[in-house]
Image (cartoon, rainbow, N blue to C red; front, side, top):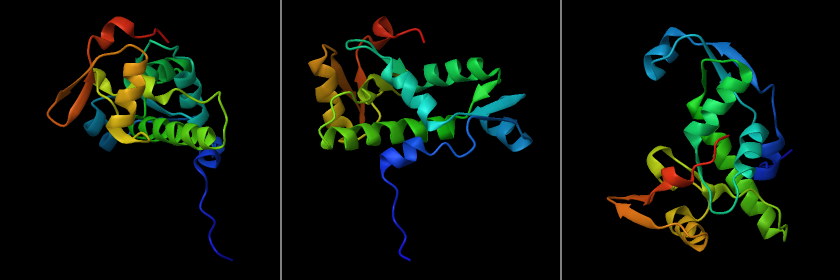
Length: 158
């Protein structure tokens, strides 16, 4: 039987056994500079927080991670999976938009640390730049990175 590739929406709803809390191993501790526990969130948890960001406002993936760590009583939220799940949420939102659905996750409002646009989101920097500018944000380029000017002033408290 041929392998059927999962759609982004299917990946978003594939919770596996997440959220899950694990002890931070020595290897993880060296990598992340933390000890204690790490929560591996579910893709839907990340999507749910990204959906809460209203037009004209922003959040960062680190704010989402801090919120999820606190919610689950963990020391930190896994940076690897939370970043992957933010991308899955973004791709699923685009997939839904292509199907004519209106109520999709405004993924472009979730930035990387430092107000940097995530180039891995659908359409890359250019599309997100357009979407953010349509919502009144000013974007400037620094090297290969695109940064939202004064993003700190419009961050939402999760």
